[in-house]
Image 1 (cartoon, helix red, strand yellow):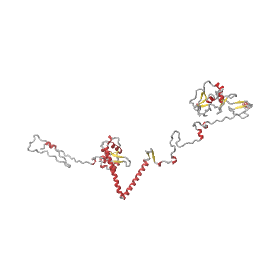
Image 2 (spheres, rainbow, N blue to C red):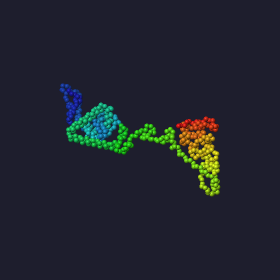
Image 3 (cartoon, rainbow, N blue to C red):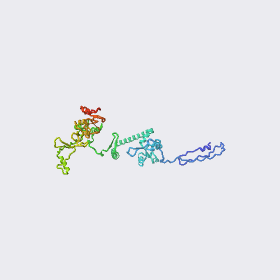
Length: 458
């Protein structure tokens, strides 16, 4: 016997037909043998009819993505850049949002012409629905390969097996095609023409890229920037030949040539000592003109004519300061030369010193020379301070480093004497030290011990 509560819980499954089944009757009478319940039975509400066979359109169908369904293509064609579909990779790896989990991965939207290419070549309309194909994104294949190999190794191994099977199928198809072509002459000719056209197209693309896109490129092995040879002027082989000394090993070394020195040039080089130093010295000055001798009888005659205002009977003579006028009588001379230091006329009996290099002459007293120094100076060609030169190197340069001897007035460079600086006090050269001093010299020499110079350099 079925109670009313049990009857209310019963449900009849619906069929696949459009018409729903009628509800089961709820007024089932119990057997007469049992007494009727004292409480009234409430009627059961009818079960609403439901249809489970809804129409599912193709744009919402879903298909689980397998490694065999993954599409990897190259775009632009023959560019070397390969891409994956973000929708397929996300479902394969169970990633709901790449932008949140992997924000560093690059992605881009697929262009309309690229979408048409995928539909024609890979038939993605059979793998994806229309809702997924409306807004597709592409991800760089190199980054996806690295991601799968590091974090999804099992799925990546399955995908590698799929790639190997695809390549194997392509090779087998080409092998079957070649076997069929070998027996057919027409197909072999078509294949030959196809290979020629492919070669022509490849060479055309290669020349285009070399002309416009790859004008210069860097050779990694040699670190040389290569460029087309027809864009540069080519030098002859003689100018591009490697020199025997391309790199200088020491400072001042000639890299590409060497110079031959003659014996005369070697004599002028300051290697140790200069043998021929004429080119280093100044030009020798010319000597003064000879003296003009005028008789004494003409001198008062010219003076009287100048006093009276009359013109001179004889031509005028330009008398220089250093010209001496000699009288007609023997032994009587009239000196008209002047001292370059004090400006007074030179008189007879005065000690006068003349420079051996210039016409300078002066009194010995004006030059502050004692009798001992005057006696020594007259034994060699003396030079004034302006023409003073080193006795060792005979050069007039570096006047600040020249020191003078207190006895002979000779000049020496401190570096020629191997001295670091000039000595303090009186200094006497080696020539005066080695000479035997006379009695007068010993009396005139002060008791202070003289400073001797070092041996000069050879």
